Image 1 (tube, rainbow, N blue to C red):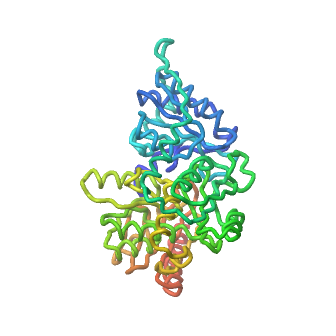
Image 2 (image 1 turned 90 degrees about the vertical axis):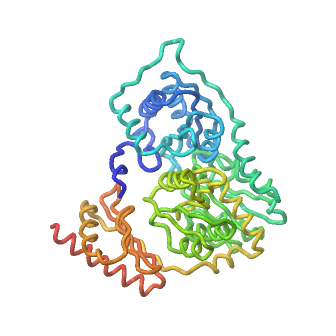
Image 3 (image 1 turned 60 degrees about the horizontal axis):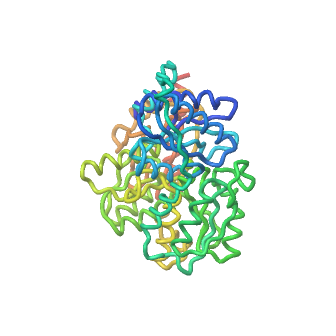
Length: 457
Ligand code: MG
């Protein structure tokens, strides 16, 4: 595990989140604004998703930024990747009010750096110290910031994606979009229509009560999307999480596509076109590495968390190395030609391009991917890190990767054991060539873990 991950208290790997009125209050967000305004100068762009508490928290963060001398531009409701794009193009930083895939009662803040990436660990720890110590130099009447509003900046984001697909690959293609009443109601249908698609929507009206489904686009919430896809003869359906940095898909038969398969399919398409490195966390299915290798690309692994993927991609590119693609096995994909963050709208557009170029139904394309047998399980314990230390001693003669937890590699199969950063448990993942091998690997590991836990009493 990366040591810096353990030091953050308030912010997790995806910003700070909590339940409104409980651990997430305007007070806290005001202090985040004051701390950010103390660290950064210039003009900070503010965005929010469709949550009912969005206005309250946006007001609080703007107040903190203005009081400490920053200007702010309010971009209104828009996807997180749209704000990241706008910040990179125009501003000195950003703050997104969102709780991503969490239920409606949650909200939170994600800080965006001038280059459009999320704030890194070192700066986040500094920000947290400022918040804890409440040491903000509040400016005098002639030094406070000014507020502007620009709800039209989101069009820069949609135009940027559309410009990547000049041949209108979506002609004669029907697509169903489920933005889940979130901010992509105003972006993904616009993008896909500009690509030539006939677009139908479900849950396509912004609503912070999320009347149609919860912000997490899990298969059980997407039955309406599946039904509309099959009824309309659509090529695919796409659904976003609450801030539309992720996209998940159903095929033309209405079948939900596993996010690792989605990742592998897009990886295959991109790696066939350009050569270089693909960057992803250690928890991503081996099928992604297999398709990348087959197409002549290599894979670099990072700790779990999209920010580690994005920053590794930036670092490699700064070193002059070609980086073709990145992402996580949860529908959060990063296209370095576009920007260094997960982008659900770009992912939806890319699926149109893939289907147009291969002229095969999505279900058939998925069947061409390598088959994997995947097991995921959690074990409750407070001794996660000690267990991993013990296991590391057992597997010294095998090929191991200590990027995040312990990953034991055997050919194309592997097992990963990680201690949760937020809960008292360890997560086990096995990704194997077939079920028999996977079960055996899993049982072996579980045995070692049970022994290790027993010895700790
Ligand atoms: Mg999200």
